[in-house]
Image (cartoon, rainbow, N blue to C red; front, side, top):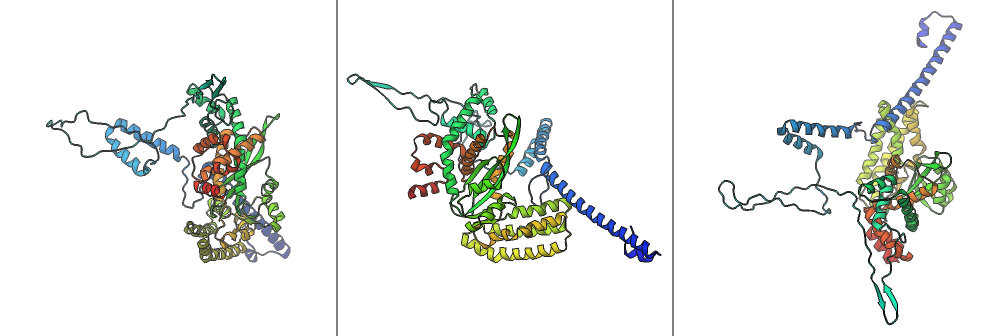
Length: 521
């Protein structure tokens, strides 16, 4: 294709020159448009490939191994086969495996069952003299027992008074399900397996059958329903405590819900609201199951709440901020989402511009790591000294780079996303208690999103709400370092006779916070 400058070397009349010039300009516009389209498609293809086949890590140094788990399994099998053929290779194989694995000591809190292995004889095989103990060689192996079923037999002797002709017996212990055969431990196992390990009830039925125990799905479904109702007051109380904070994370994930009569599913949503780790108080996660993704659901949940709300760029939240401007609901933007735009761009075409953006944003996170264990006042000072200058330099660079970037491409979109939300993105650095991104709530949602591959859909809106309530309790327990199954078992034992005025003491919160609530009451 001839360029406009090359037309001067051709002997063309004015009309022909004008037509050729118009054709060249049109062709150049078409080429530019095609280049932008190719860039966008390349970026989209790389994004889809990464999500389908690659690791989800956004680390610049990550080198995804698509079959890492299978590779490790195959390597172990190959080593075992080599050892069968050549026993002398066992030591070298074990040594290389240990050096890679970096075996960790087994947890101290686990019970130990000791097995002492004494020699067959306490006399020396050479001279016959008695052997003297000089030490012990101790090695440990981790073991596990599958679900073990057993029966609690409650015996209530009955005593009679011959004079008064009355019969006396101890009262029947109250339970979540009156007259039911399920003890609190079994109810905890069913709920934990279903909502924490994402095992459908038919799989629990099969597990019990292998132990020659009959647990029908319909019976377990009834247990789940009744347990959900009994636990709902705890969820309501956790929600109240969450809304006392002035900073929240919010996010949502789609959930398929069965549509009765049509044999299909429709899309519902599990909304998540999480407390802020940079503020004092317990860590709480609340799941709210709703039939759609409309912003009115967030508005309804946060109806009387005021503070900073950290969200992604979903438009449903925009109406909430617009309507509550006078009520001090302030938007915080997520740097992880801004960074992701440049990461996808860099993955697609190794963009040097995207690489520099990632490095500059990485500097912000380095400062956050430095201030992780500081007090709020100390973190605010650190951000004023380091984060704000970094952000100012980043903004200048973004503006200059955008001025030199053509519209319509992936580079322009990544730059525009960050510049458009700049006011909400930098708000965190002006304080010592606001978070830099929305990763805390996304990390809590992720296991549930993975679990959807097992349970596929919820059977009804009520089932979704019940799942959200129980996930709230489990999620909060895990955030506070509690064993969810043990906490639930203990709570199901206490709940039938527990006074409502002391309900805070049953919440899955740290002991020090429970103690503080007890003193306040």
